[in-house]
Image (cartoon, rainbow, N blue to C red; front, side, top):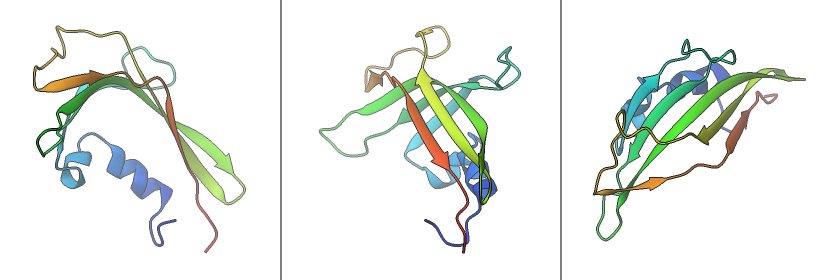
Length: 115
C-alpha cells in the first residue's frame, strides 16, 4: 500500500519515458510500440539494469509488456504482464558488460484499496 498514490499514477510512472526519472540505474529502449500489430497493445522493450557495484554485472532484458485492465470491487486496476521474447541481436546486441536475462513470466496486479 502506498497512501495517496493512484493506480493511474503508477501506470504513468511505469512508462519507459517516465521510468528513467526514478530508476536512474536503468536504461530503456522501446523496440516496438503498442501499435506494433499486437491486439492487446503490448510493447517490446530492451531494459538494461546496471549493477552499480563490483563484482556484480549489469543485466539486460528483452521483454514484451502488456498493461491490461483489471476490474475490482474498489474501482479499476491494472495487470502488468511481462515475458521475454526471442532475441533480436540486430535491435539489441548483447553487451559484454551485461548478462542477458530471460524473464519467463511476471505479473503485477495493481488495484485501488479503500481509504
